[in-house]
Image (cartoon, rainbow, N blue to C red; front, side, top):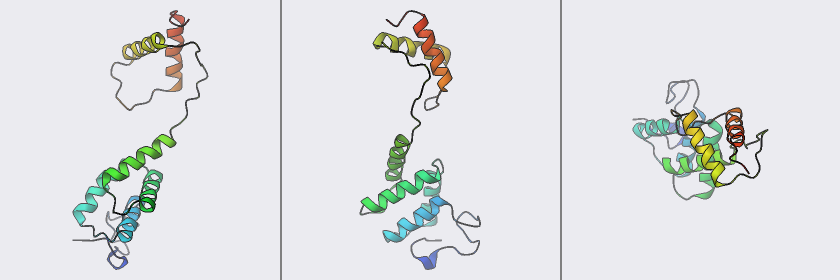
Length: 149
């Protein structure tokens, strides 16, 4: 059972956790946290962390672990890192910069836009983003129907 807790237990020269020539950013962050918090990680725990971190990008992982290590007293749980990645994503979300900016929109127009969205994209999956052009096209259509004062 491979454990990551002290530098002497770190894999060396090709005997890396995922058999790659060097550790991934996620595994380096995990190792650093394990060392800082004096945590022994079993192979099964490492595999669980790998699976959990697989959907995150390297900058998100680095930032989340760094913040956790600077602000917390205990080794992170996957939930802690996920929460911090959510904060990262919210802060780094692209800002809407529509060329077409409707004015005078209220609840009726937003509801009309919502209905149009569901009519045009019935198979849309939660979390998928529409392009700016798709949103602008729908906003123009709602406005052309006379829904905007």
